[in-house]
Every structure is written in C-alpha cells, then in structure tokens.
Image 1 (cartoon, rainbow, N blue to C red):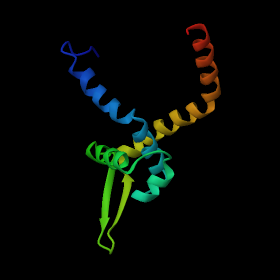
Image 2 (image 1 turned 135 degrees about the vertical axis):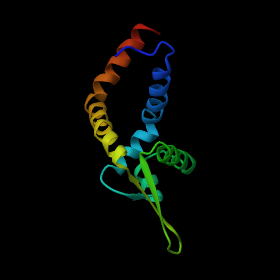
Image 3 (image 1 turned 45 degrees about the vertical axis):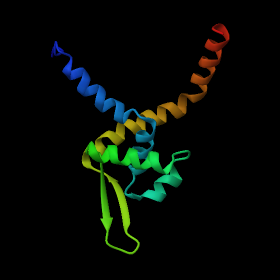
Length: 120
C-alpha cells in the first residue's frame, strides 16, 4: 500500500493518534478498561487531572466513538462513562503500553540522567 501523495492519510492518522496519545486519554481508557465509572470516580482514580480536563477528555473520547455516556434519570442525575467496542479494542494496546512504561521507568530515567550529564 503506497502513501497518498497528498498526505491525507498521514493527517487522518495523526489526528487520531493525537487523541489516543494524549496522557489523560490514556489514563481514562485504562481506568475504564474494567467497566463503567462515574465522573467523580474517574477523577479520584486519575491523580492530578482537573475537573475541566477530565470533562474535555471524556467529550473528546465520546466524539471519537471510544466512550459512551449514559445518563440515569435519578436525583441527582447519575452519569456513567463506559468504553465502546472500539474503545475496548484500543484498551488492549494502551494497557500494554502502560505496563511497558511502568516496567521500564527506571531504565528510561537513568538514560535521561546520563544524557543530561553529557549534554548540559
């Protein structure tokens, strides 16, 4: 398969990768991998994310068809977020990438320190 001479395939893939490569999107996808969660539950689970950033991240993931939002008619209203089938398909490689990063964190930090010593 040859690349499109106008590079439209690169632009399309880049826009998708920018969503799924965003750190907050990765964390949300990882947290939703084992089932639906409420907004505040996600916020507690993802250390350092602001309410606004979580809202924007969930909206973007919903727009891309990776997450669904279900509103339950209770008082107060209950809203659950859940991965779609497409989101579950992405969850597997995201989980693998997260595990790889965790397993190699020390090695990468050591490599960065060595690099920074040689390149002040």
